[in-house]
Each structure stands twice: as C-alpha cells, then as structure tokens.
Length: 126
Image (cartoon, rainbow, N blue to C red; front, side, top):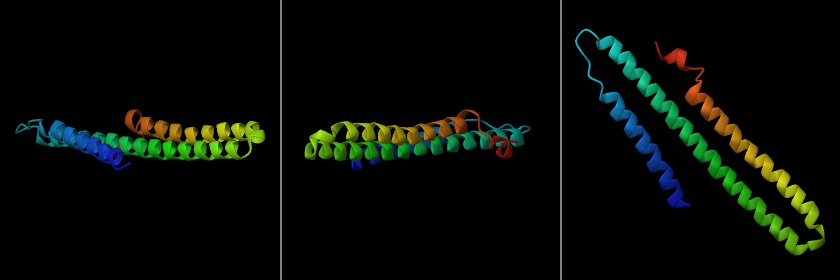
C-alpha cells in the first residue's frame, strides 16, 4: 500500500516537473512579454488541471479497488458460511461491484471533462 501511494506521488511530481519545464522553456522577447506571460499562465493552468485530474482518478481507482476487494472478500466469507445462499450473495455482489465501478467511471468522466472540455478555462486564460 505504501509503495502504491509513493508511486502515485512520484507520478504527480513528474507531471508537475514536466509542466514546469514546458512553461519555463519558452523565451520571452522584449515586445512580447505580456503575451508570453499570458501564454505561460495558460500552460500552468492546464498543467494544474491535468495534475488535479490525475490525482482524482488515482484516488477514485484506489478507493474503488479497495471497496471491490472488501466486497469480494465478504461475499466469499458469506458463501463459505452458507453455501445454499450463494445465488443471492452473488447477485448482491455483482450489483454492489457495479455501483462501486460506476463511481470510479464518474470520476474518470469528470477528469476527462476537466482536461479536454474545461468549462473554467475562460476565467483563467485571457
């Protein structure tokens, strides 16, 4: 678990560093300093948007995976205790797993909206 969280943190730091390199690599000229500054701000805005979306997806996937693991373990325990109720337990398990997975998919949809069709971009990019 600690290795997984450290890998997520390292990926987020790499994304942030890549955005910093992209934003700082642009050279400003004397007459275009204002335009270049606005362009650099827009680059930072999208870097932070991608970083936030990646963190949101990783947390949603982590929570969904933990929830599905716990649900599957409890269903297996229930079937082991009462094998005659395996049909009902399996039905409830599949229904519960579908709900858990739908929440992860909702997080993915929101992250994709933030990255590709960002409704807040007009407030930050001049």
